Image (cartoon, rainbow, N blue to C red; front, top):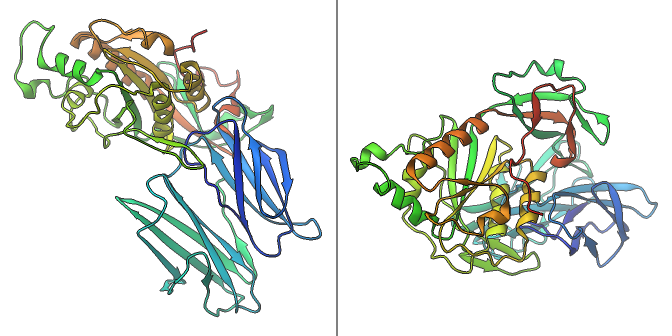
Length: 439
């Protein structure tokens, strides 16, 4: 009955335009931002919404109303939270007794606007789709459950899947009813069974129910700023240590613990795509583990690095926060600041740090240059990691911090920074940044 025609896949704040795709019998729509109604409008189904001046996670809900003011559908979209770089959704038009029904497919991709192919199936059977914006469904039994699926392929390993399960004249939508809450334990602390966590978590003063605890693989995103990669190569090559070693002996320098994965993101914007959602993309590597080598060795041997210049460090840090938390796993972001670092982002450094706090992503700043850059201090407390020994020490400390994290799943859908850890959770605190935003 209703879907978002505007999908916010990037970082957005301020006033944005929200467009909806609705069925013919919808007369009015409401927009709720973080639970508060901010718009009530009709055709042409476009409205401006003020997300506020700060970069922050948001929940945007669109509610469809019929001519009598009754709710006939709703859809949720998370803003400034981890999500796929391509998404798709259906709007189903009602039919009569299982016939004459149509569907409209909407999509958006951060990679490209036009897909290479669109494949639609109905109950497993492929449909001929001359126009994905109007898909005629075959006659079907109205009393049975049916599945409509579309695979939208944008090439370069980017695709989106839309599913609509329905029976009769109504659609069925399943929304997540669990929220991941990253917490950090004191040394030696163990979490009790979830049944014993009553009163540990609240949302706006209301108690929440813990449903499960996850301590699966962690993800650490290292942001390369300035000539950080060259500084890693300098340390890995042996300068500043007593005697050179065989290359293979240094392969696990700066190794993280088993179960901790890491990747690198380059602060120099490789490309910028400007559409109605104004997205930035930053080059990032595949995930690595300790089986591949240590952080120092892998970083020093990266094959392709963007030349410093036109860097958007604060924006890259915010994007790294989304990348670190996109699987709702244990996480951290580390900014590696090398020589010649410069930040040309319109987003202030303190705003990027505050955004990571709201995502519950611990954030660290390491200076890897022989001469520290003044850019590093804009992001908070700086750790000197400019020699092999100091880098090893910083990596070991980081690994211990990440190892103490747990993900507690609570019942309900909430913004991460609105879930509080109460004093009853002794020895447990929200996973957050040790660095304080400057100023």
